[in-house]
Image (cartoon, rainbow, N blue to C red; front, side, top):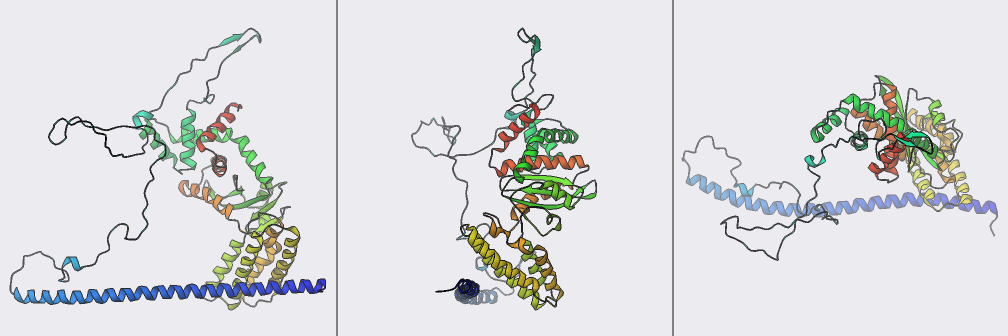
Length: 482
């Protein structure tokens, strides 16, 4: 019988054996892949050599024929301005055919399942001789998908005559409200919804949106009017915007990130708090920890973030992003004067991440995860306590020391990722908006973009119908009614 100490020692030795086994498997797989690739390359080269030898023989025969023709017609005066190539017939010159190559997989549009209308085409007279032709039972079919003609989608101006009526029971004047109309707005909800989608999903500029409205609908709407429209939608979305942040704070797993944003030529910061179902954006003047505290105030669950120090003092469990750490260590190895220490450290981190990824993917068992957490903590402490001589290795060691056990928090909680890729993808949305617009002229304009983008990205993440849901939110925000 093993004593508990012996049992845990055996477990520890098995774990190190598993590490070495994983290394050998990866090395063997790499060698096997390389051998297969070389064998395939060798086979391809043999075929190419055989093809070239055959082509060379054909070219030699053709060259011999051309030399005979040259000797026969020597002295003939050739026409001026005629250009001659290598002397070989054009059909012998191998050219790569344009377009898809033989063997490439083809792509095409599938035939629609739902057909909106059926049109049968028939002739009464022959188009060639104008002779009368009879109808036929045989036919070919051709299906097209198109959008309505722009003459069929012209804007509709509606004048509502709203009666002022008297309620004898309430003893007051009452009036009805037209359905689907935003009170006080001279523009319809369909136009406002389209402007939101064009701006934040299609990423058009205000100039482009105004041009589209003029070209397709004949509407002359200035860029300033469009800005004011989106400013009003920001106010109407206010309650939904705060609900998104509340939902993110209560989520078991949430992500945070930030990126630069220009406001009136100054450097501001766009912050994002996101989950798999929601995205909340805000644009602040500072990158300080106060913004992070405001975003995740009284938050529950685990926060996944990069190694930015502004998150460290937040009172909730945190998982540091392994992708950032591995990227930094990899960049250090690419330097021309990279030390052997940093290369070895990078390999250690890669092996540690692979094992951590495998263990995190297994069914969640808290007792087992706590034991794994203890072992991984020993591995991290071993790296932290190692005496590195070279500065590049010391820089990576400092990153690991600062993050410490935040690198392995995912072991103690279910469904916590090891990377912050969810936040990185969410940040790309506002980065795309920033690249097109160059930022905002005022803080008000920046917050307009933050609120509207938060609503649209959250609708998209929840797989809700974008246009219908936007109109529902707009009407509810503008009228206060569901």
